[in-house]
Image (cartoon, rainbow, N blue to C red):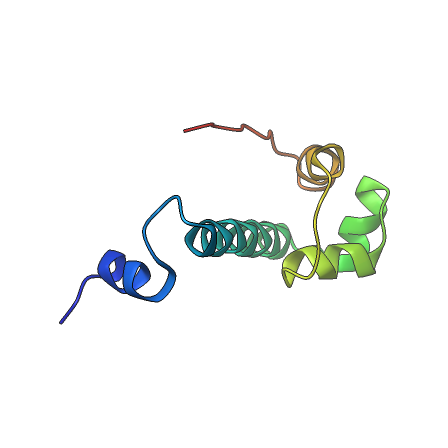
Length: 93
């Protein structure tokens, strides 16, 4: 049995390589989409209702939740603040 970290290294290379960084970036986008979807559902909102609350479209919310596109920071902040009633905190490591 191999660790997940070892698996990632064998599949995408060491951290810092282009392939590994592309994987890590994609995974972070995926996590963000899942988080927004879970918060939306916890609050009993449809994609349409969330879109209306934060001034965007249902299609845009769907794309974020399904990791199908980039999201602007200002839009993410509106979704979290106005749509989900939360506060966005960013951490740089």
